[in-house]
Image (cartoon, rainbow, N blue to C red; front, top):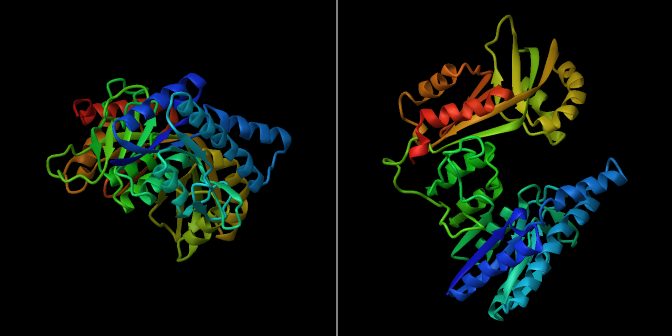
Amino acid sequence: MTRVVQKYGGSSVATPMKLRRVARRIRESVGGGSEVVVVVSAMGDTTDELIALAHRITSDPPSREMDMLLSSGETITAPLLAMALHAAGTPAISLTGAQAGIRTSGAHRTARIVDIVPQRVLDELERGNVVVVAGFQGATEDMDVTTLGRGGSDTTAVALAVAIRADHCEIFTDVPGVHTADPRIVPNARVIAAIDYDEMLELASAGARVMHPRAVEIGEAYSMEIRVRSTFDNEPGTIIARQDKMEIRQKVRAIAHETDVAKVTILRVPDKPGVAAAVFGPFGDAGIDIDTVLQNVSHDGTTDLSFTIAESHLRKARRMLPSVAKSVQAQGYTATAGIAKVTVIGSGLRGTPGIYAKIFRALADSEINIQMIATGEIHVTCIIDRPRVRDAVRALHTAFELERI
């Protein structure tokens, strides 16, 4: 008998009718001879609505209480789905993250899973139940409820699949799989049949919303095969697993983009050891992630240091910049919104002459100016003006003929 973990996102369980549809799919898996553990997200826009509700009470809600509040969304979905399964004649039981044995760090709103003790889940499977687990949540050793951050239900599902030694983990969503680009921008984008963990991790980190990066990291660390599929059809979707056809694969696999981007430049910083640490340290302490970094060539003993952050953090960054610039004896700073990043991803980028030129030529031919460039072994990221991001994605998708995958 196979054992599988299935995760259903918020759009898949948004209404009672959709919950009953999910229940039918689960019943099909059980009827096919599988033991099934299900991880669910909050219904529809419930999480956003709960956040808005909290901010109607106070502009600065305590993180612990926010975790108690936000975890209720998944805690509502899980028993409703269990009820739908019972009504259809399939034994099921719902569990919170804590009841499923998910133990986390104490960082409220951004907790990390430190251990899973899945004995309750295994016992319920032995009794013949479908186990429906509330995703996105866990508990500390002191049994304080924590949440795992945006996309945390993906992380719950893959980690739980590892803990119970499932054969694979299925991520059901409202799209048919991982695409070569956002199909809302590129209508002829194709579903990628199979992709390696490292390429998927780059794709998720660069802005693709279909999988959470932390879930991919766990899958790679424990060689857990992940299948991304549509809730609404029976197509195979995308398999995320180690690939062994490196030489014959498409050199570029996908184009990703992100629009929640702002650029910060510290002007005329003294070019000496320790300056970058002094700049980036306060941002890290404030919980602001630094992304693309560019340092200009030093002239007359000073340099400009540019980097990107999420635009959602720009207001906080602007409050910090005067003291940061002063601490490193910079002569000024700028903070710019309205930019975006577009990323070309593929294992074939390394060791393939001409690919970089092809990327930059495609953007130049579309008269798209590149403000910053960051490269890695399997990605090239270009920072551009936000109004041109759709044009950039289309140009790069066409240049690498990804519609033919």
